[in-house]
Each structure stands twice: as structure tokens, then as C-alpha cells.
Length: 561
Image 1 (cartoon, one colour):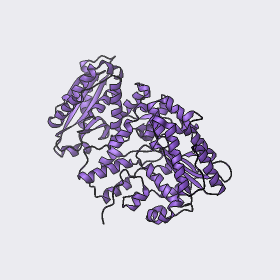
Image 2: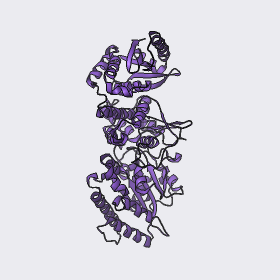
Image 3: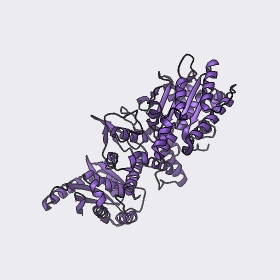
């Protein structure tokens, strides 16, 4: 029997089951959703986590229209063997807002609603006349369903997709859509709320997916007709892949690789602080397996171009008014390998108040740019994996260029790094320091040791030969930078870097420099014995241990141990 096809980019559940695609069974969550007291739900996750496919599963399970296909679609699933009373019980109205034209929102949204409502009427053979006003059609449908006691389940996918795009383009246009009473988008949600009220209300269930709570807050002043279950423990892995699910995928397709590679690049998302086990991004794993099977090797490009493209569109949200403010400092801290903290994640905030630190950090969490690390006095958040770290670095690099603060000759940097990889030449580390020193504009932003380090991480990570690990745990200590080989058989050298820092206002005496350098050497000699390091030396790749001592932004000492 042929291998099942990989459902990379496929969100049609019926097609997956009909056409022999691999399906990771999440249908036990249907039972869990029904057990909730709330029937109107909002579920947020970053892009490409499998939300659209899960909605397709809900549609197929609950829709009367698919009753004859039930056994084909659900026969071998958990819910097919544990059928609930509500299976094939509803008329389903499903919307996907990702295709709305932001250059003509009102007309595009109106046409889309009318088209979907007309399809709904035809699909269920309802005796309803179409009107030019979609709100009138909505109310007519709701009245018809109420009179005929036909229960409705409403699904909305990517509810905030076009509004987020609009926010990137023009905040005033965004406000027009989400806050003006006459705006169709606002009327749409007002109409949904009325359909949940009163005896025999037709709208029995509702499930809405999106990325952030901003639009819902701005259009409804919060999801005040139901519950936001995004941070609930029991729904943590309703989308995304667990470690066991990834292991089963790899075993099925006979992908024999070091599993740590996948953990490092695609894992470590935690969406509930009481969950100790992280999940993987669905799309990233399917992308990797798809590429691996085609090329029979680890892909040269570990980041799916579609994922990179999705995040690149968010730059203007991340950088409020294109200014290097406190939000920029937060990003730089994260890139340096440190965590940032909030008292609690904010579940309701406006897109217009991103200058507030807790809102900005919460936004980064919902976008998947940071994730929960642990809870101490406050909730600590950090970058989840190598993929996101490199996307965050792209943000930082673009912003420094945009603000005309720091522009590096990356071709020259790559040549220096190549010379290190092949010959062990440490000029690359000196070159980067010299460029920082020469750029007077960057100096205002170099006032802490972690900021020097974040610059090194950012620009060394632009070169694909290595993975740059900050605060890598080695031999019960934490190395400032671990520059480890990745997916290149020609690399001859790798490195451990230890930074020492003298404040600009303090005097950099020879004795002080020597003392700091000796401390750094002792640390490096300890780190070199860790098995995460020796695994490469056993492969005849030479470890280079480098001490760097900075006085402010100026490199005073750079030597190999």
C-alpha cells in the first residue's frame, strides 16, 4: 500500500480523508468542546497552526449536509467511535475572512457575505429571497431558522485577517471598519449577537478562529457573547502537534534524523502556563517532512517561505509608528537570549494601544513571536525556537536600516564568517565589533552587555552556516554564545564566545581587562567538556574558544583561548 500523502497546505478535511492524506486525529476535542458550558467560542493561535483544518473537521462533523459521508470521514477517528448526540445535527454557516479586499473593504465584504449567504440558502433549499443588504438577509435567515426550529452552527475562520492587513496599511481605515456603527463589519457582529438572544434563538453554537484578540476588542469591546478559550489548558494542543504526534509522523514516513533538530527549529510553543509540554507548529513540521522526502536530506532552507512571508507582513504592527521605542528594546532583549515578563497575558486590548508594554508583549505572544517560558513572580516569555528567532532578527535588522541607524555589509560579513568556518579565522568577530564602533548612530542603543550580544546574535545569524545559541546551557553553566555547525559537511571550525563588559563610564584599566579575560577563559574551559560540544569535536570539527572584552561599544580584547 502506498504511503499516505502529506497534507501540507491542505485544510479540506473531506479531501484529506477521501484522497489518502495523513491525518493527525484531533477529534477528541469535539467531545471536550461539547462538554463546555459555553457555546460561543473564540480560539486564537498564530498563523499556520492548523486552525482552518480543525474548522473543516467541525463543519464535516456537525453538518446535516455531510450525514451520508460521516462513516467515510470519521469511521477511523476517535469521535467516529465515540459519536455525540449532536453529530450531523446542524445547518452550518461558515465564513473565511482571509480573502477580503482591503482596498475596498465595504464592497468586498458585502459581496462576500451575500455570496456565502446565497450559497447557504441554496445548499439547504431554504425558501428565502436574497436582498442587496446582507444584514437584512442575515436577519431573514435567522427568522426562518427560528420559525422552523432549525439549529445553526456558525464558523468563522481568520476573523481578523483582513482587519490586521488594514491596520498595517492605515490605522484610520482600520478604525472606520471596526468602530463606526454603520460599518458592515461591526454590523455583522452586532447581528450575530442578536441571533443568540431570546427563546428558540437559532444560533446555537459559534466557533471563531483568528490570531489576536485586538479586532474582537475593537469591534465588540471584547468577546462579550461567549468565551475566549485560547489560554485554557485542556485546549492547549487542539491544533499544533505534540511530541508523540511528531514521532508517529517521522516513524510512518521513515524520516531518520536527530529529533533535536526539529525541536530546535519548530517546537517549544506553550499557550497555557500550567502546561509543561510544548507543541510544534503544524505547518513547519509538514513543510520539513515534505522537503526531506523530496530531497532525502535535511533541507537547506529550514524556514518555509510562506511562514516567513506571513510574519514579514506584521512589521508595522510590531514597530509602532516605525520608531525604536520600548518595544524595540523588548525585542532586542529577547534576541539576546533573555526572557521578558508580564504579570499576566492580556486577553482584551485595542490595536491602538500597542505602546503599552503589556499589550505589546501579549501581541507578540498571540503572533507566535514569543511563548510562555515559566511562571515565577511574573509570567516569563521567550522566543520559542530558531525559526522565530531568525524572523525576529529580520525585524530588528530591517528596523535599524529603516531608521538609518546601522547598515552592515552582509556580503563582507559572510566572507569573514566563511573564512572562520573553513580556517578558524576570528576576524569575523573583530569586524562586527569594528562596524558597531564606526556607526555613531548605533551607539545610543549599545548601553548594556546584552545589547552588544544581541547585535552579535542578530548579524551572525544572518549567515546560514551555523545556529547561534545564546545562553546555551553547557556543563551546568550558560555560555554567552555557542556557534554550532548546522547542515554543512564542509564546516571545519565552530566556536564558543564569552563576552565581558566594562561600562562606558568606568575606566578600562589593563588589570581590569586581564581579570575579566581570565574569568572568561575559565568559563570557556568548563563549557568545552559538555557533550553538546564534544559531539562535534568527535567529528573532527575544531572548537575555537574566544574571549571578547568590551568597553561600552568598543572591543578592547579579542583572543582565542
